[in-house]
Length: 274
Image: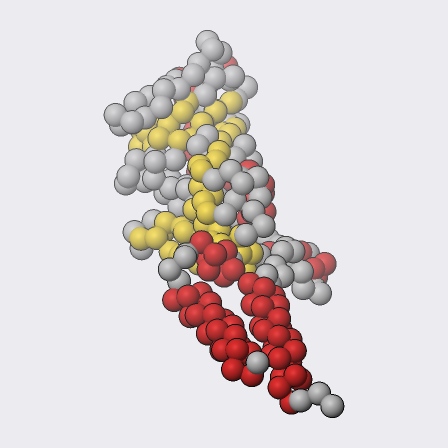
C-alpha cells in the first residue's frame, strides 16, 4: 500500500501547476469593448443623431465670397483686407463675383469686411453669418448672396491611435468616428469606453473635459458627437495595457509576489514530504 507521503508529492505538483496556469490566465485576459456602438439599440439611437453646425471662434479663418447680378458692384466686397498682423490675405481673380476674401476672426470676435467694416461674428454658425452679411449688403447690392467657408477646421487626435497628431478636415460636419478615421482608428490597446474630449469654451474662457463611451450606441445623442474646430480627442490605453506598460505598478508587483510566494511554499512542502 502506498504511503500518505507518496500521495502528497503528486498532489502538491498539481497544486503548483494550477498556480502557474492561474498566473498565466490572469495576465492574459481577453480584450473587452473592442466593438463600437455595441448595445442593442443602434438603429433607434442613430436615427436621433442631430448636427447643429459649427460655431465661429476667435482665430478662425473664414473665406467669404460675395456674389450678385452686377459683377462690377460686387468686386469691392471681395477684395482682401488686413484685420490683424496674423490675418490671411484674400484672393481676387479680377472678377468680383468669383473672387473672395479670407479673414481671420479677431480675439474680440470681429472680422473686417471691405466696405462694411467690422462685423461681429463670434458664436455664429456659418449660415447665421451669411444671412447677417446679406442683410448688410442689401443697401449696396441687388439680391446679394454670401458664401462663408471655414478654411482651418483643425482637430487633434492623441493617445492610442495609429497616427496621432493634428488633423485638418475637409468636411465641417465631422463626427467622432470620422475624426478617429483621420488618425487611422484606435489601436487594439485603446479603451473605447474612456475617450476624453477637450473643448475650449469661448463663454467660460476655459477647457471642458468630457469622458465619452464609444461602445455605446447612445453616443450619437451626445452634444459632443459632432466635433468643433480645435477639439482634442485623447484615447487612453485600457487597464491591461497600463499595467503592462508600468513595470513598477504596485498591483502588478503584489500579484507576482503572491504568485512567487505560493510557488515557494509549494516547493517547501514537497521537499518536506519527500
